Length: 261
Image (cartoon, rainbow, N blue to C red; front, side, top):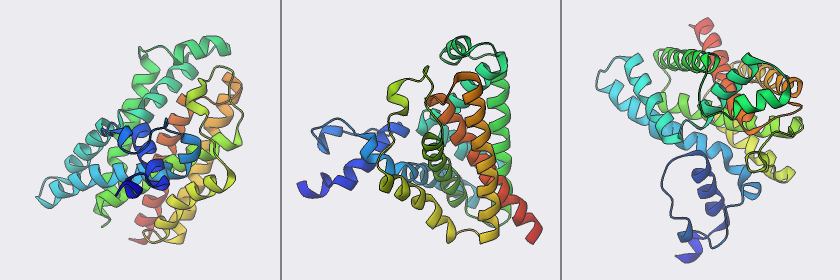
């Protein structure tokens, strides 16, 4: 039994769950060492699938109980935000505040790290959540299961965190702990496969192609804007990237779903 719960892959998965969710984990039960995100980076998308399946499963049950689709999706997304501790939502709001205010890198960094939200942050986060609810509910109405939609979107967002971390330099204003998760090449490849391969069984190749194309555009925009304003990426920028690429992916899936209908 001890071999099972201290098995290395399970330990890595639990480290990622601790990082990206508020789910209580008794870490000493799994390892005597501190969590190692460099080693566990391959499992980032699994946290997305887990959150999506739990929160989306709740919403799906409510919808099956004849709750209006948009309300069931809104409750599922609210529960997801609670479970994740608004991890990526916080990054989006901070990025909007910093980039919206402008100035030199030091000033923008100070705004991003300010715990208070400004008009740009509130506006961006509010609009993004509204768009998220509308995208998810629209996809449910095309016949997809809510937990599958949310799981795939969240997993893709976690995958693009890894992609942008690999593509762009780190800003001098970044906290070391928030960007020091880049593991070996094989772990990065496994990370990408863990969101891409399951999606092959859920969506058509055309849907995936458009969704990923939009994700690439959004992730590159986040990365290059961060480079322009801050000289590189930070943890908040990566969080915003995860949120925005999730929306971009779901938008691509929805556009082709509507065309096929």
